[in-house]
Figure 1 (cartoon, rainbow, N blue to C red):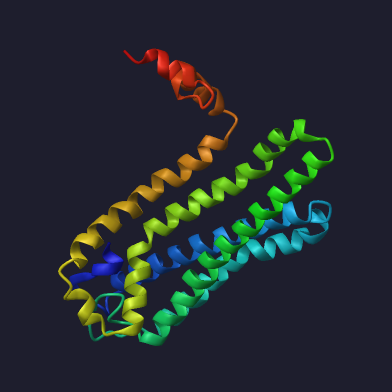
Figure 2 (figure 1 turned 90 degrees about the vertical axis):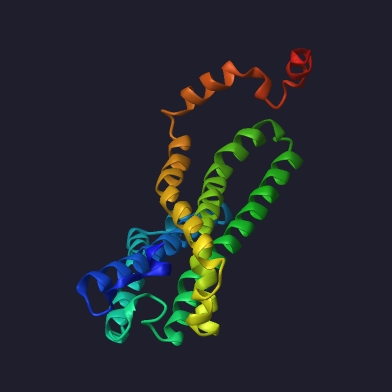
Length: 247
């Protein structure tokens, strides 16, 4: 929330203000760019399964892993160089509009749109593979294959959605500030309420993203199966249990 509303009582030329604002923007960039790298890895795995290890050699993997941090570091250095010290501690008032457009295209446009595009392509290719397996008379293994290959795709889609909702107000405000003067943004009567809700989403992101990964681990699956056995009517194929439980 602080990145959106700023510190009204803190000057922009303090070290605390610069460090906090730059760290928040770097976090957003690393989040979205890392999702792009994960989506690219899944796309290569499903689209080119036999060339996966040839395409993703160790030097290339190291390069892809370092790219998000290099881009975030470069933008952080640029933010320090162009930071305006004459205002209060506020992100949108202390940076020029061209830099806001740069962040919008970099972290939001390239990373988020690129991730969603790769996920759509991955799902289409996976579906095509399943149809080919069924056409070749291998329909018995299609269910397990779908479960194995789509688990990572669904996980990344969930994290994309959670990351999007965590930064939704930041995306809107960033776009708004890049187009019009920031004073009109802060004069909106709905801004403070939306900003407060967005801050709660961002705080919860630290809980639900690890939770999604935890649901995929082998250690947590027996716990999930035990919980499902306690509620047999929740199973998709147990419609009769729901009907018989009705008075």
